[in-house]
Length: 374
Ligand SMILES: Cc1cc2nc3c(=O)[nH]c(=O)nc-3n(C[C@H](O)[C@H](O)[C@H](O)COP(=O)(O)OP(=O)(O)OC[C@H]3O[C@@H](n4cnc5c(N)ncnc54)[C@H](O)[C@@H]3O)c2cc1C
Image (tube, rainbow, N blue to C red; front, side, top):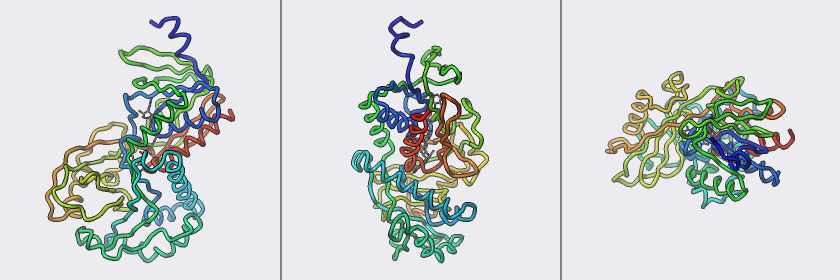
């Protein structure tokens, strides 16, 4: 039962954004800045954002050598270059907006471990540097001269360095978005799960704590629910994709490298985090099983990652695991997000895969432009 005051002041908005991940908050901020008089509400089902934005590895990346080569087998050159450019510009944009310190950004570079299966990629390294030149005006990839000093197993035949990649702290990035949203006057309600949209009427039906029924009204609605969108809108091509991360206990030896590492065509990634190993990915071990919105841990993938840590990353070293968690991304047949108007009042920005750190802010900007024109 709500009071007159609550009914009068808390339920009606110019824009309601569903989902408070990178995309939802970026959308709300860009829209509020472009429309200072508008009232903007963000609804998030979790106490904290509960999809991928605070569960990820924090790689500020745009594609490894083998990933770009793989993309070129099923996408046109223009599409691949466009994708890399969008991601790189996205990274530059968040660094400019929030600053490296606030993001916890470190420019330790990106690296890719090459085993026997990917040796062919090295022959094309110069060709890919030339291909990417219009975006970076410099060579992106180079071979690490003394890879043995990094201490990986001898399965690793070469290490490719990417001098334009870095890493950040997703929690700090989220804090920066929250602060900016609050300063802009955006209201964020968490623990509110949207159950249904009555789009023609601009009604957003939701459930709050103690299963209380909430009925919000908005002139415009933005759906930024990524992998969880199908419950509210039938997306044409969108599948959930779960990702697992393992974090070791502090290691009792010095780690002989720093940076964001990719292996197995980008499916596996690792970095160091305050003297620990953060290791994640491995969806390719069970692609079907990982097509899930359930946050549980796939034991097959966990075993695979633990094996890689033992046999490839730190051979002959002892280490113990302390934490594990999963997050859910969204994938489709093509790698770009869906950003579109759905009807008079509703627009969506969803299908963010493994590069949301790089493109989330920009995707929010694009969605806010769509909303402003509606
Ligand atoms: C394990 C893992 C590692 C990753 N590593 C990296 C990386 O290193 N670099 C990188 O660039 N990207 C990485 N990503 C991808 C990146 O995290 C995502 O692309 C990005 O976070 C997507 O942002 P989003 O806002 O679209 O989705 P989300 O962060 O999932 O936000 C959607 C929000 O909507 C909310 N929601 C859903 N349904 C409802 C509802 N009915 N009512 C109210 N709220 C709702 C959810 O709770 C969620 O908070 C990784 C992802 C995972 C899972």
